[in-house]
Length: 305
Image 1 (cartoon, rainbow, N blue to C red):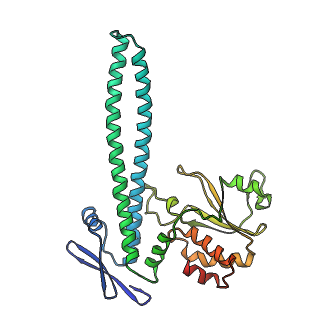
Image 2 (image 1 turned 90 degrees about the vertical axis):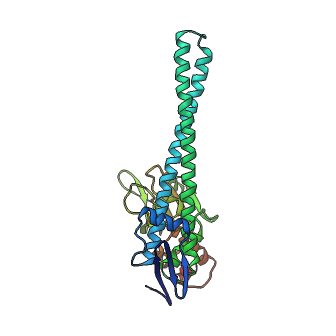
Image 3 (image 1 turned 60 degrees about the horizontal axis):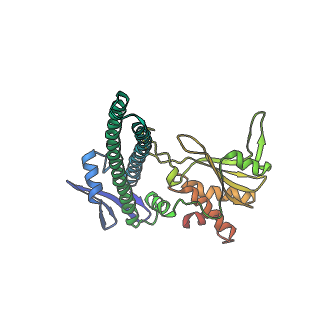
């Protein structure tokens, strides 16, 4: 395939998997190559960009599964520690040698054995998170190291380096209700509820910790949980992450004082990159550069952000 003036292709010889960029050859890291061969992942395919982006998403989704397993193990361990503390107190209170003491002692022994098993299970879960986290970092470093200047692989590499921390100029609200209550001009009332009086609402904006990495949710996560919209009454660009799947609702006020025409240009410029990693932060970057009066067209700002 062609990406600008750079031809990107696969090289696959037995246990060696590599990507060619022009005259350069980049071998997939050994750990990733072993994973591809052992798990039967469909690499190499017809399009290195599609293959590598999908591979990163699959690894990220597996990491999400490992993280959820670790969370479950940690919660179960905490409950078991509480149970053991309760049995410690019951055992101390039960008269030594009587039937109640023997029953509590047996329960205490079983609880202690289960606690040891849960400690080991959590250690295994921690190792799994570390293992898959390393693979995600490896594939991202590999793609970034290809040195592509344009095309989908260059876009995702820029997204990964953009970062996902909330910028200082962004104001966070703990949900849509708090956001609307802070300024009634933001809302349009219906018979039952108040909704943002927004134009140009688009969905699927991405931010690394919030991407839809549900391990049982179907295709790998290549879309995001965030909606972005423009409020003409307050000249604000905002984003909302809907609360579901254990994730709390959250609203970010991304930028203020954006006239409608400029807002349309800004969102149009960012839209082609909506499915890139951390695209939500791209909107913030473009708006911040616009406020600083760079004089550049938003489309040019998007390319450099």
